[in-house]
Length: 157
Image (cartoon, rainbow, N blue to C red; front, side, top):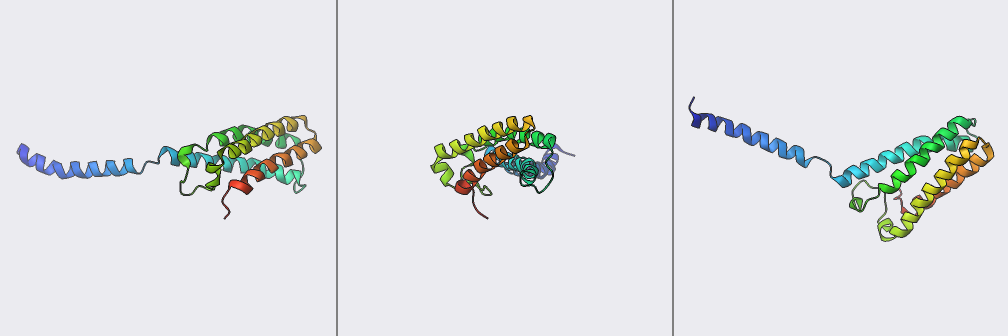
């Protein structure tokens, strides 16, 4: 086979490969999309731990001090990661549940996130003591921090 014929045969294959690799690169999520996915995963993990504590605090399931303390510690570890997941590159992304007002009132939004971080840390500390009444009160205090931010900055379904 002559080299010119080999080139003519290889050229279409090269063009297909180049097109496919360009398409694959174009489909890679952006940093902002990755950050949004990270944020949603953190909220899922937060809810996974917060839900059973809420059920215990409301008397819908028996209070288990060790389980409550473990979940409270996890929430306290997740909260600061949530705070860092609201980078400016995520502003206006589709599938975000954040209202535009959060960007316009960033200082207030950040203060609400700091409040969540602080209250969840206090919850974890109180939960370690095993004092059911104090742990439940700290849970509701933390839940109110969540609600304050959600009421103001989360899009409603």
